[in-house]
Length: 351
Image: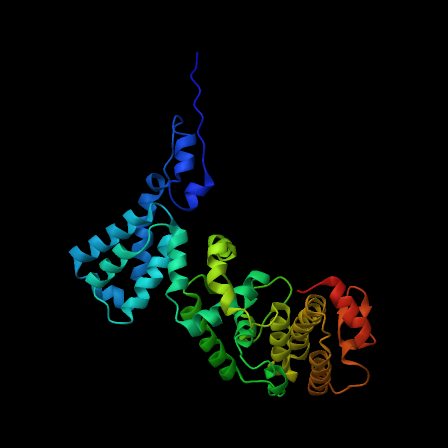
């Protein structure tokens, strides 16, 4: 007679640590411990992550202490790669502050081994102003991700009227890069790796000749997204969101600002226009969502979008007769009015 064994994988344990309730319930069954299967992968993973940092490369010469640091990280990780990602990020941040290996070892020893508690510590340690700004970023990201980093840069603006004040002549490639660099630094310092930016190589629908669309923002891992929804995380974030705008309004303002600052050029007119219409479609969708969720029509912002798109048409084309919406060819054909175009875009949803 062949003896049968039940092997049970509990995903709660894989994501964090050994939960007592699972240990008690399945104590008589064979067990697979994640760290036993991943330990050989984790050490080179840690070494590679730290080795990419120029300051850490100089510390490799302190071989004994450096090896002990790697060993402590691997042992404390217990097979959880997300924990390691956050730890490495914290250490690299410390290296920029002149920390020594002894400082890094103390930091690792003092970090919670539980992933949930580690993320809670990240939120608790944020400066008050940074936490308020991070809370808005997290709220919008939970509402809709991924986002373009350029979009996030406008969401991060504090003045609610900023979309109306943006220069409608577009901005240069240097100005775009400067804005993206600033947004990247603010994302890193406020969100501490829970939200990250990622380079985009291609998108199915649009090809991007400028830097507006080459970085997206998303959660570093689904675990971070789920953590930010928990009651513990929300208890920290909610007090900083009492006066925060509706996320749909945040997104609408950001897209209008992007449309106004978009670098339109006649040399690539049709390409630029197709990208502009992606922003327009998103604006119309979130205008609808904002009105539904707040009860307030977004007339001022939509009128501004109509105005600036008319200006863009004049800059792009010699023949400027008719509405700018005629330049859009959708699944239902051309749109002869802003009203019909808006209805069609809202029904289709955002890009």
